[in-house]
Image 1 (cartoon, one colour):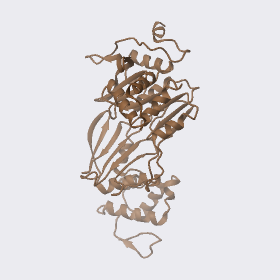
Image 2 (cartoon, one colour):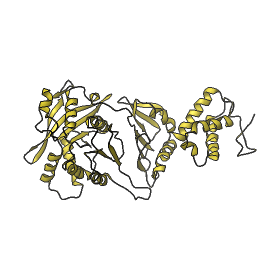
Image 3 (cartoon, helix red, strand yellow):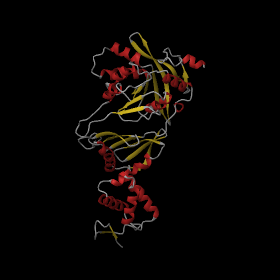
Image 4 (cartoon, helix red, strand yellow):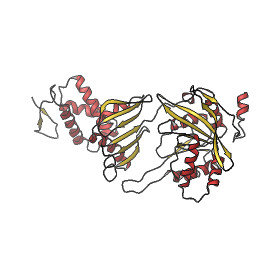
Length: 413
């Protein structure tokens, strides 16, 4: 028995692929080739008709496939052509927050806060092909001359890939999922600390969220934004857009890396300066990693009360030390005492978050205070040995906005 490939290839025949013993890989190869012949411009990917188009071709190539096998092949083909192939089921799983493809083919996922190896395996060629499909429309590339790339997926998730020679064991791909549903403050701590954070946001305190990688810093910023008055204009600045503030008046700015020719880059520091010309009530910088720290400090100290940012750090006081180092990268000859005075007047509190098994949580909320020429953090809320976030000290700073009562008055009410 034979099956004709299609009208575009008259006289061409293929083995009886509809038989149970036919190779699925060969069927997929023929479907890929047929789709390319019929749709060289990729219109099926644009008009939402990919599944029906692939289904028609699959029935034409292998008309006698059993229903179960047909559905499985159709799903695999749609995932390969328009999605992330074998990774697509993982990216569709709401419990998966991160997907990591190692060079040897192993795939690890973070599911409900726990890291585990998945049964799926992705070979090197497939991993590179999936990444190229994402970055090519963005004017980026992944090859030996440009072996590292970072991009944002359509749903806001962040993709990072490294290939040889930088990754000697093979391609390494990390996809950090974008959380569709907002997480409330109570998910970090259901106690009085959440009430204090809401007050601090309304009072116009400038907050710095610190913690390690994937500790929940961006998620906490999203949660804090729920306490912002909807009438305020908020400008967000990020290297890769991840924030989804639940507010009506938000302007989102995203840095742009250089293109394949090495030109056209717009960094976070450029965007911070641009944001100040956009009449913001608050400025939210997704993360400071370089000289933009100095521009951010100046923005916080020039009337944009209630602004927020994040920084990688291992402790609250380390977050302030890291700000000093990052601000020094701005190539401005600012004496250290003046820089520390700027930090003290700009940042009101440091919220430190960490990642435990199955949950992200607030470890401490510390007020920024000055002691002589030094800047220190004093814990207002801190976890005890039982893991309870308890109030340790009362804040000395007042509300930056006169329309908001102080924390003491808020507690009495």
